[in-house]
Length: 233
Image 1 (cartoon, helix red, strand yellow):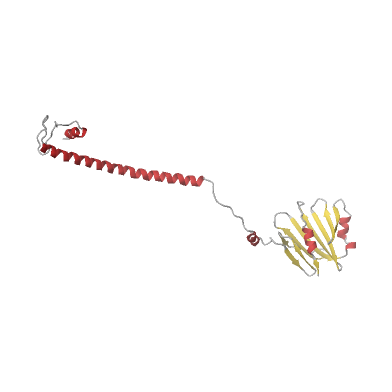
Image 2 (cartoon, one colour):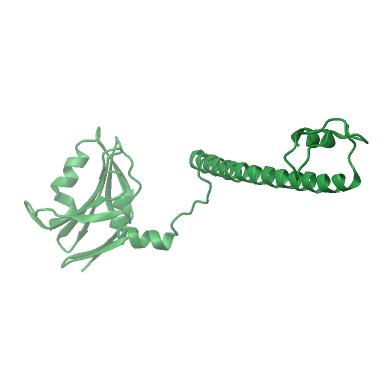
């Protein structure tokens, strides 16, 4: 029977068929022409066999293709994930608005000092630091910079007069270190290396010495800022 199917499928069988009986168990007879009845029995068998084989072939391909497609999709997802991890971050940068920056920095604005003897204003980015009252001082207040500039501001009040003050005399006696400058708010001395700026102000037998120092000689008018805002009581 397989021989007949092969002949028919190949198209070599036109009028003579090597016929194998389907309904009997007799040995095949070679060289016998098939009747119309026999042909009508063989053709449906061939078509059914062909359809069955084709369906089986399609099922086999489905079993292969579905896992293959799933594997390809998985590989693509892994590649995209790795590429996303290795690529540089893309986004936008934002800065804190000034109003919010002031909230996080308590020293972002100038401060005010008010005592028994005087009042004054000190620059932004300075904070009060503890200091001991020594010698003839009635009052001492000190401030340190908060912006890593290593600046200091000191204000001391003591009894005396500008004409015979020892501090003024010391600065005047060392011109190699200090330069005396005319100021509208008092007597001013500027250290030649740029690390100190000092003002002396007098009122009713009291002297206020306002001094700003900077280890890196980066003073920017801090002493004048305090001295020009100072008011006696």
